[in-house]
Length: 405
Ligand code: PSV
Ligand code: MN
Picture 1 (tube, rainbow, N blue to C red):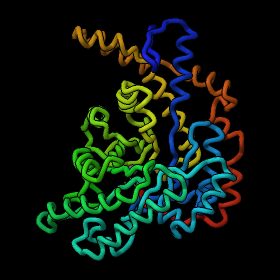
Picture 2 (picture 1 turned 180 degrees about the vertical axis):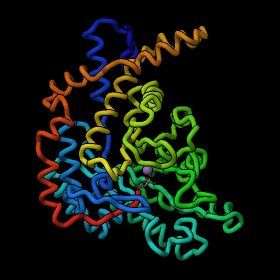
Picture 3 (picture 1 turned 45 degrees about the horizontal axis):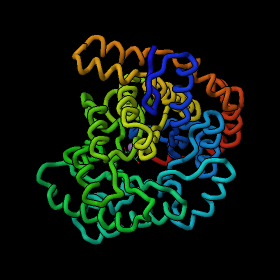
Picture 4 (picture 1 turned 60 degrees about the horizontal axis):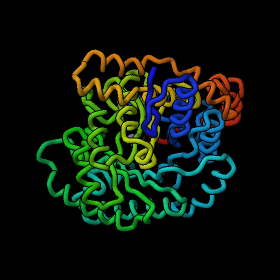
């Protein structure tokens, strides 16, 4: 098989292939979410897990264990109200935990969806006073991120309305533009504001940032350090996500991802569990853009597992992400381009999906071995006895539910 290195030239030998694979794996890291280790549930009920993390230290410990086993999850996404209730005053604790468990603080996620005062919206609330409080929370989040050395402030805005005519969609756009501009002004030069979109839930008629067009517009209005965040679960069932990704890459607006899988709505299922080919197609679009763009894309997981073991699910997710990333790296892009130009439809499609059907697991095992990592992280997790140990330690207190993701 002929393949293309990330740097561009075509290679053929087995060792070239291995080098390409290793380069691709070395270039891929993914952030884990603190809330993925905590007890979560649906609006119908929660099934608690003895090993679920309830304290920030337990979340760092779990993330540290995932990083130890996989070697590619060096950062932990933090949610302000859930993890940093005292704001910047918690920075010292976070630094200590980061040092202790070998995982740094990652993106900082403001929380504008829990307080009672945000019942009718936060940044888009008709009350100026409430909007100002929501903006203050955004500015606090920027300050927290700055103190922790986090590059990204990652905003998901739950605002919207449930019935036609009950809110002014237009005025809310203006309020939003103003709020995001104010937030952007406080960013340090190395910081970014990521704007996530979602079509519905919790609002069921209109959501203020419902799709990538709205998010892109708001990011452009906010300022040069704002970008769009794509959560794979935040699309209508038939949407072509890789096409959205291609457009965002083309316009320089892609800032990051929240990866998860879904069958119906925002289901928070394990990445690649329902449609691994979709993630492969997204990764292909990203890899077409080359190395320089890669450093500008934050890869994050946004999942919460109610039934699966949380640690097992997280390790399984990371391993799946690596497999799909590697498969996408094996697409012979120069050849694909030629076939596309010649409109050799079947040959192009076969080449593309042929890369998807590669069994890359042996290469991944080799890569892990050479980097001193367990060849099979899931098996190593089982052998480590970590889940049993923390379940015994934490089980007695049965951690409370911290979110309904
Ligand atoms: C909203 O559904 C969301 O995707 C946002 O990213 C939140 O921060 C996260 O879920 C909370 O679980
Ligand atoms: Mn998300």
